[in-house]
Image 1: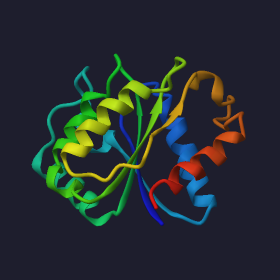
Image 2: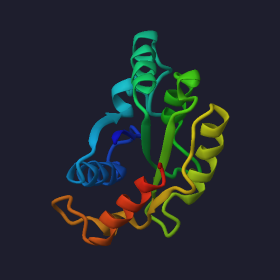
Image 3: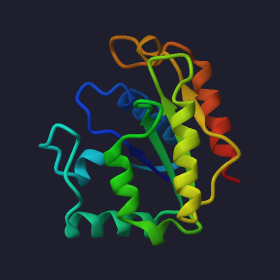
Length: 170
């Protein structure tokens, strides 16, 4: 299968990048084609709130990516029980292109719920734009404890969890 992984936050020090890179590495090791997309590349991140609205050339580039890809995996932290604003702006830039696309969500948090509340809210948005959602999302709770200093995951069971998560796209 082909996957596009979207890292959905532009914040400095984001721990969700470790998760997104781990998912990318896992899928690649399983023989899948993976493209990695960072929300930072689609926003003017000079403002303190994570970015200005998308300019047309940037929005057009994102719409093209969504239109070409069959399966998208969003890796996003939970901020204040929800998803980052810059992720919402990116989703809104390609509203019609999500129709019929498989989109899975992986939540990341420093607490025990692993982004579960963010996943619930983001699923509502993605269903509204016509995305096809798997039965559930995947969570990475206590992210600050999951990776060693070199960025490697400490718990090998997460590899199997990622593999089982992508099976829900069938």
